[in-house]
Structures are given as C-alpha cells and as structure tokens.
Image 1 (cartoon, helix red, strand yellow):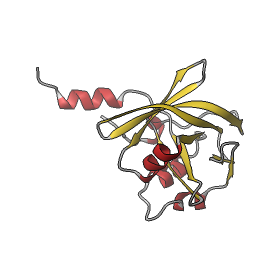
Image 2 (cartoon, helix red, strand yellow):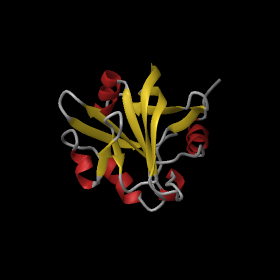
Image 3 (spheres, one colour):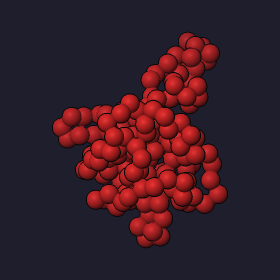
Image 4 (cartoon, helix red, strand yellow):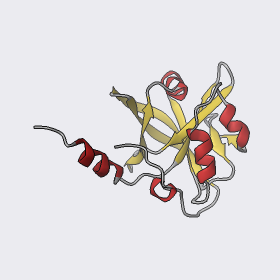
Length: 162
C-alpha cells in the first residue's frame, strides 16, 4: 500500500484547530517561555484533561519535560498578530512574553491578561514519538477573562500540519 502524500496533506489540514499560547516557566532560572500551539484538544471530563502535541526540538518542550507543567491560553478571535509573535523563532528564552501582559497563576505559569482565558495543567502522561511529544495535562486551575469567540487556525489562512 502506498500513501498518497498529497491527499494525506489536504485531509490532515482539514482537521480543525484552535490557536493557543502555551506557557511554561523554569522556576530555577525564573524564565518564562511559550509558543503558539494548535494541536490541542480536550481529552477527558473527569478528571479534566487536555492533550497537546509539542515540537520535540523546542526549548519549551524541555521545560515541560523537566517541570511537568504548562499553561494553555485561549486567544480571542482578533489575536492573529499575537499568535504570529509566538510562532516566530526566538533567540533566547522568554522574549515573546515581553510583547504581552500576563500574570502567574496558582501553579506559577503565565496566564495572558488579554485573552479568553487560560488553564494551568500538571502533566499526567506523555507519548514521545515522531517529531512531536503528546503531553496529557490535568487542568488544575482555570481563569476566564473574556467569554468571546476564540481564534482558530482556519481563520488565519495559515497551515500547520499535513
């Protein structure tokens, strides 16, 4: 059987994705970092779980592995420019958070002030395979800032996946 690569790319890009800012914090170095995440879904009602795929070569990946914590901030539908800031490669840890106001939540993770809101999660499982690691996080705290429409990948005209 031969995989039709063009069909695979088109079909996988049809999977709907929201856009989120994943935040991490290295408490030993007191450094905050983050990235735009799009491969995210809810995984369970009880306990409340979220599932997120993270590029294995990224600096945030290593912080999640070492701390077993991450935050997910839900972007508002008009925050495409902010998502772009967190997509771009950076030269040092933390530079992206200089462009946005945030508070540290109960777990000490960045929660964006101007967003729909965010959750803080403890990692309860992971699968390392391929070029991304799938982390399963149990939601420990939740902050609702604005109950408005959220940003999704299809509305930006960008592609990530396929």
